[in-house]
Length: 427
Image (cartoon, rainbow, N blue to C red; front, side, top):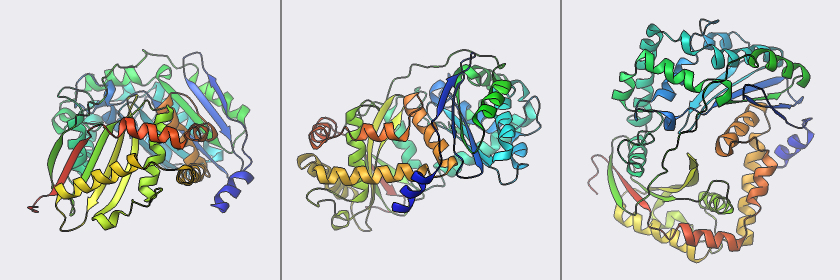
């Protein structure tokens, strides 16, 4: 812990400069001279919630296409790979798609050019051969995520249980195999044009650079790009009914019990309360020491507050020890959660959780790549560029009294219970 904090204190960072171009692009730049690298990130309000045809996977398909040809490049992926030591990635969520690349400082202009190409010159350059090549790649990724990964089938079933048929989030960002295959070139281009423009995006640059020079390059590359329509689809949040469903799990070797509750507003004190509880559950800590999960035959326990489309979910997953009946495991997990509600964490336990979260957040910010990714994730949750200190300050508002009240309000409700039984195991 001390070495991480020492690095952060020693790092010669400056204040983040935030500004907005006339075409609507929101920009945050943060110089950091501690290492000779720069990370550029771009995020678009373009996710499964933006899709008109549920299950199409259009947002994720366009993410794949966004590494291919543009009006001025045969392949953005190859452009990035031509930069020595460059690393890049992209991901699609319920409400957004993000891209990130880390390059040596001397190549910051090229990384910014790549993002400008993606933002202004991608959509019309998508052609049928490129689309035909990329669809099988996306379908293969879908198989890896859902049918070849342990608990992938179960996670998809949980999402399906929370949203009704026809809801854009029911199939997740990846979409269905039929929906992906059905996407036409006209649909892809139209979706891209509606969502990939500066009025629907934010840009983040962090690392070793001259801020005045980088701002000049940003204005040169991005200021002339055309702003398109705003994208803020109104989508109903998840419906968490108190019921139990059983899933046959084709890949995992152990059973799993999952509890899911509808959570509070993402930026509220109640959300901070549940995030602290999630940390305690993952760390197996509590005031009375009840979270000795192995004694009740529950293993690999995880908990998280998940933010999706302006709503939150509180989820606890517990893999079940060999030989344990899932119904019995479910009752034992239920009792563990009830114990947290009846005997909520005290000030000492909350302080321990807060220290753990602080260290995790600061550690993720030691390198510019992690810092930029963190800024993007916080932007996706709040719609603003929040500093680590402001986020930590939100957690510090939680008290033993507020946590006790939040647990009583949210975890007393009947959860969605999912019992995942490995196929071939008759218990």
